[in-house]
Length: 437
Image (cartoon, rainbow, N blue to C red; front, side, top):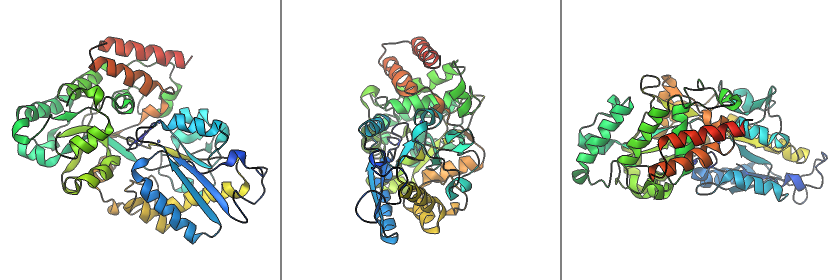
């Protein structure tokens, strides 16, 4: 996920700040509450602008099915993600006057930014069925302003077959020292294992390091509370040395140069083809791996922790990658149709089956048969979640752009040996304080 690109963020996680374009509601001539929607006659159009590229085809298929079963509804979906900046694209969409009916927001920072463009969704059935804690990041003044996509988790995705050949017991990897020991073994045996390197650190992707990696080491500082991060005037980097250690391990044992590795190289060329044994990603990458190497995807992948030694050992970050927001500036018919569509997605038997089996989501709502979670990475996320071995997603509470444009960009300088770690931390602390004045 996002966040502004969760899969590449979104190809989940996470989810994290988790983007739908289907409504030109802002320029609807009858936005004063008439019952007619966009389009001709009695057809109500919903424009969705969303970020999650990895389920684009499945989502579009669901929309067509929904149209067939709901006469008078037309759904237009535009997906912007992967290598693109969804946040920037969303701003451009609104500034052009072509506002979507449904779009994505990433948490409290986005809620504040888009407050005037978000409807209160408290009366939806989906909001009533959301799991405890999943609405927190999109709730303000008692109003639910966003509905969670799903639950996503991330860590170090690893190749079970390669680990077995190298004699590494993945169940014993709980600390950074354990992770480093595994990397050293793989480095020593990479020729016989057919590896280019043990790891693939896609440092070119600012969200991977600046949002997800940083979150793993800042979550404990903010007590796993996204609102605490959002309200904080400063950032300490209390566990900054462990963050440094994790980046050093990932970079030292990676295919080089890491600043040139993007998502496509990381997942499609290297990991999915068995050229590396480990890479930081989340359960959202399953579909990418499966499309390239079904045997690997279904039988030989799992998630390792990204721990703070002595604090969050054996855990992975789990959270909501993004929320669905509904634009209040559309017609009455468009607003209601948007709410109905989201309720269909998460609260009807048909919708829930598609969410589980086609989207491969870990649901953020009650009433799902979680035994039907099918892919191994999502199963791992759900196991970590149910066993209480998770930390939060506080990156949704970072100052806007701070994670990617400051932390991620500074880490690029660090791995290129153009900045010290102390300079990385200092720059990040300074920018956070400036943004929170």
